[in-house]
Length: 87
Image (cartoon, rainbow, N blue to C red):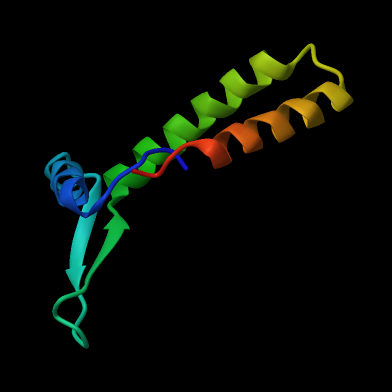
């Protein structure tokens, strides 16, 4: 999970991303209450650029760790992530 959100702030996050041109909203023709969100071309470009940078940072951080240390770190981080309250 990258961010924590709820119904109250999710709409403003989506509007901000839409305003930046990163996402597109599409109405669901079967259920007008439902909106589908997808990455725009600009959003996909930003996503893949950020993903490349994140992988480089990750590689630098774990470069000197032994495989067992990486497995332990992964388990610890998963435990911490599970303990983060959602609200």
